[in-house]
Image (cartoon, rainbow, N blue to C red):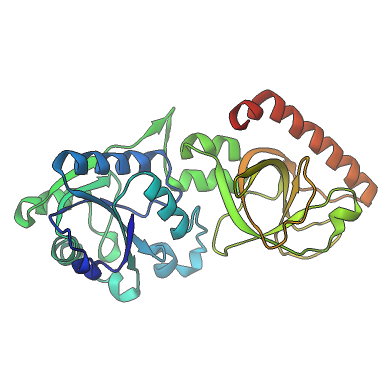
Length: 318
């Protein structure tokens, strides 16, 4: 997959016979997003055209409403990796600025989608919006399609039970720590990737050496607590206990830290990159009156984690 920064730079691509393009921010790349992406790839194959995704970065909400403090499910780099796995030919990343946000819906379609990208097919979700103040709708795309020379497909909502699959729903579940339920809507496990950095080595003194994980800012973390996770380190995988929180037993800091205890592992992984797959929540964060009580709780957490591994997750990952 080729990544192009700025739609105007698509003119440098030799193959411009017409694009099948999927529009959206695709934060988290969940099941509803996959249906849109799969349809774009299918149409591209049928019509012998190239497929593409257009992303706006930074997220429009964080530019237009910075006070909202919207935390994202995935970085653009993470989305790019998945989109490549899903078979897209191009990822076009458009810098979303206040100036760009004032482009009218019609001019966005005419100048960017048609003028720069020569779109032949546009695939969008039923709730897609675009242009100044988000006034553009899928219906507008249909209305302008004949005049501007492209075809539009509007994908209906994806339902699981009574719930519409959406990034906002998944954010709510993750923020509450419901990582297992969130995985149903994602179609995969929620992940966080970061670099192992030096901490206070307090876990080592307690008999449970942990790796402190530093992740990119602006990303959503699960609710404070202890989770059963799968840590991926290169080609190696380890079940792990991950604590997210403020370490209230030892500090009064407001800083949120991620501490990972790799089960059945010993070694030095400082500076290495780990990806955590969040499988299940073990318990909420709790303050203990002394370190001995914390150690007792960690033993109970590990016992519960190993029960889940044996009954549910070992057959998935091993």
